[in-house]
Image (tube, rainbow, N blue to C red; front, side):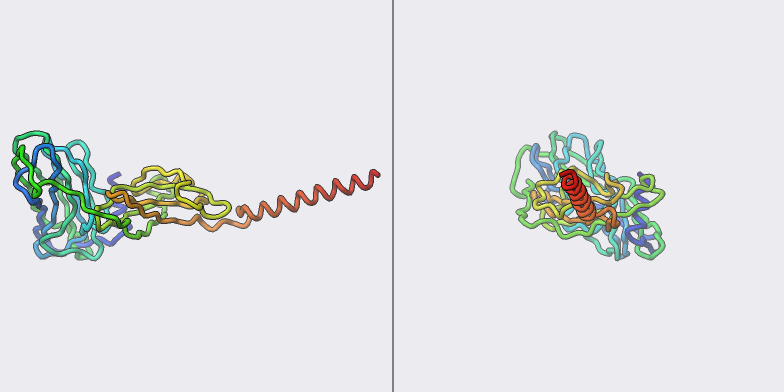
Length: 296
C-alpha cells in the first residue's frame, strides 16, 4: 500500500518543493474544554511560514477516552486525498495534495468531531508529519508538530457543542479516471476518484458496474451499489460495463458520475447478435416452410 500511495502522489500531480523551511501543523477550536458526552469540533491546520507546499501527510494521536464521531473535510486546501482522513486504532491518518501549491498561515485540512468520555484533560498531538514544498523537485520541508490541550467539563454551551451545518447541495461534480499499471494491482484496471463538498464534507463513496446492453438504466436505484474507496479495482476487467460512482456528503446528498464502457468491437455489439439471430430464425423458418411445401 505504501508503493501505491507514492505512485498516486506522482501520477496525479507533479509534486514539488523549495529549500528546507519550517512548516507547522496546528489545531484550532472555539473552546478550551470538551463538554463531556457532547460533540465538539477540533480543526487541523497547516501554516507554511510563507512557503508554497503541495503535498502533506501525517497522523493525529487521539487521546484515550475521546471518541471520533466524524471527520469532515469540506473546504479543505487538499483538493485530492491520497489517503482520506480516517480513524483507526487511536489515530487519524491522512495524506493529500494541492496541485498548484498553497502558501498561508491558515491552511484548513479537516475537522475531527470529538466526544470526550472522561472528565480528565486531554491532549491531541501530530506525529509522522511530512510536507513537500512547491519547487518542482519534491524537497521535504522541515516540519513542526502540533498539539492541543483541552480540559473536560460536565457543562455544555452553544459555543462549544458541534452543530452540523445545514446542507441541501450535492457534492461538486468530479471526474473519475480508469487506468492500469503493471506495478499496481497486478496490472488490473482500477478507478481513481475524489470529490469535494463545500457544505458538510464527503462522507463516502459507492460504486456499481453494469453491462447496459440495451441503453442506460432508467433509475440509479436499479443498480447494486457497494461501498468503495479510491483506488478501486474493477470487477469487470473486460471494461464492457458502465461504471457508476456515487459521492455522498454528511447531509445525505448524493452526486452520481457515469463512466461509459470501452467502445465494443463489432462482434461484441448486442444489436448485431440480435440481427444475426433474427436472420437465422428467418432462414430456419423459410427452410422449414419450403420442406413443408415440398412434402405436400
